[in-house]
Length: 195
Image (cartoon, rainbow, N blue to C red; front, side, top):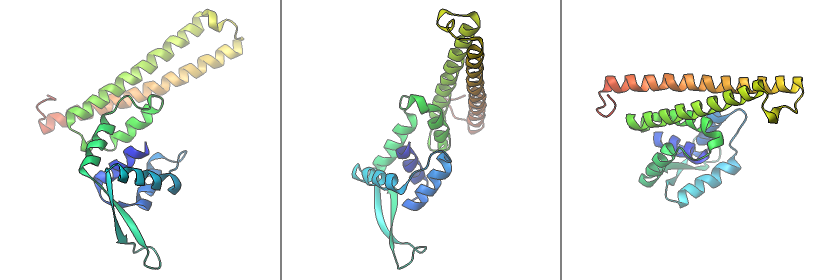
């Protein structure tokens, strides 16, 4: 996640590390925070891979004329950013979080690519919803693997499955709404491969 966010932020502009950390923490918080101890090694690794470059600048906010590093994305970094944006297989357990972070940077993608990501996420949500509804039905129907549970345990299990299903239904509604907006934008812009 950090790699995608760092490159995405640098797609917008050259930035200092402390600004990258601030924006990342605003985006991924409050339960997750990027520390300087994890950010700067990641920046160094991205530089070694040729995805970013650094330059020394005078940090006007820092005392004692301290030099700060400014980070800029390279052409290879832009290509890698695009690969990360279009990757729909990494982090399947956290894909929902990744998808909504990617949406923040849709302006760097072609309309057809944005639609491809949205359609994939819609399918991802539908899969989760279908699975949870099927499991809730198994609880109600008293399938063999649920027979050992007491009535209160069954009720709590059913409640949990329905809550999770509702969550994915809401995600699906948001994704469908996003799809409608992307399609409308493509119609207005006259994207030939979308209309």
